Amino acid sequence: MSVLPVNPAELLAAMASGDQRALDALYRAWSPRVRVFARLQLAGCGLDAHAIADEVTVDVFHDVWRAPMRYDGRVAFGTWLLTLARNKAIDQIRRHGKRQAREDSIDRDGHDQAQLDESDHDPGPQARHEGAQRRHGILDCLRRLRNPLQRESLTLWAIDDLSVADIAQIQQAPAGTVKTRLFHGRLNLRQCLERWLVQEGQA
Amino acid sequence: MTEPMNQDDRELRDALRAALDAEAAAMSPDAGLAQLHRRLRRPAWWRRIRWPSLPSLAPLTITALASLCLVQAWLLWQPRDPVDQLQWRSLPGVTAQPAASLRARFAPGATIAQMNAALAQAGAAIVAGPLADGSYLLDALDPQAALRSLQAGGITVEAATTPSHP
Image 1 (tube, each protein chain N blue to C red):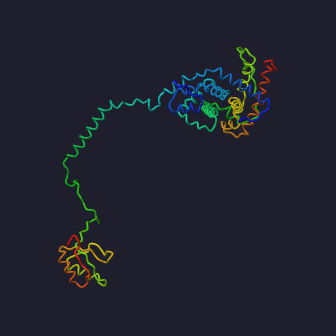
Image 2: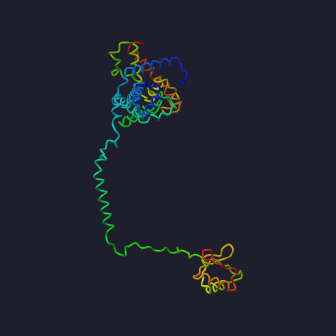
Image 3: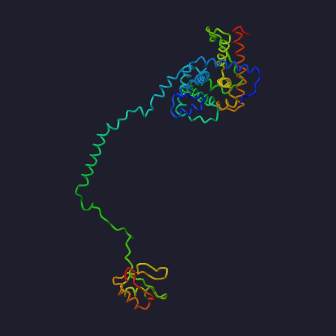
């Protein structure tokens, strides 16, 4: 059995020739990141984010398998893959008629306050380490950002070290708009984290 | 290319990235892979249609073709009304020109009437002309008699039989 390459471009070329092992390798390497991104995309839209994110992830890689050479290398592979995931997630939200968050908050940057719902907040009784609790808190705050475009910008900013230009490409928005989303998203995230730390008695 | 950022932003991004990485690491990389494989195995809709196989279609196809041949043969052997018989008709305006047997050149001052009279007397008719040298190709039932008649006439400058009619 030959050793599979890890370079996405090489895996895609192998997939184009019908090598399903290349798809498996690509899936194992990238699906967790796609799934995390999709879950955050679907957070707060009133749907079962976990189940639909799983579906989105499978959809994305199914599309990649059907036309692997659609990736032309003009952008980083991660950027391209997350763009597919974003479009699939938006399709799912539209299909389920739950677009309220995305549609209603057309860039109300700076006016959203991430609010922490105490009754809903559960840092996890299983979380034994402070670091794990903090990570949980950060993700919780990220999910609670009211503006989904801020949440998306922050996720992309952190998930794969994407530049503002890359994020602008994915969101199909001007770079200035992305910077604004990032600025206010960071602001709201910090405020949420401060409240969370106060609640946890760590401040 | 990443943009320059201050220390607070960097710390926030690192914390966020660590949280996202931890979330991703907690997931099984094989989660959903079986579902993907099932979807890949599911054939396209046109493959899911149960087309009859070619061998099973063979008797039906052969019977249909044989029936068609029999019907065609029966139609061919049917007696027909003479009116329906195929008839060859010449197309208007397309008539074969008779071969020229003579070549004659008339005097430059000869009138049409004089030419017609000479041709009628010789029993000849114009087939083609005037050619580049002013001559005409003629046809006559008796080329030699026609040649003599034309040569005897006063308006013919030059007359001769064509090579195919010496």
